[in-house]
Image (cartoon, rainbow, N blue to C red; front, side):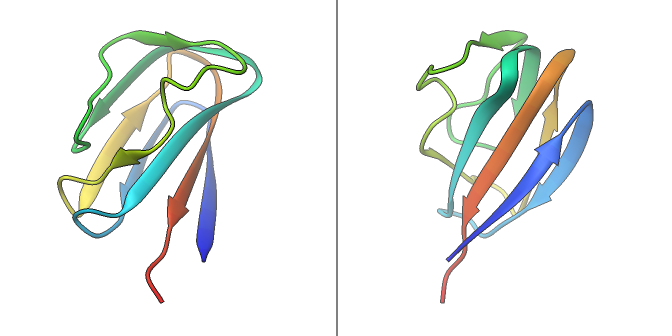
Length: 81
């Protein structure tokens, strides 16, 4: 299954190592996106609508942090059954 979290400024996301996560911009671009704890971390990135930049990332640690400077992200995580 999946679970989703809306991120307006900063959030800590809990997952399992190897679990998939996608960060999708919501209502326009998300700017100043910085992540820690994912296989492909982002550093002050801009994710425009329709971009695949945040799609199919992977938890490297059980807790990942996501910060957004402006805009909103939707984090969609796969959950093991």
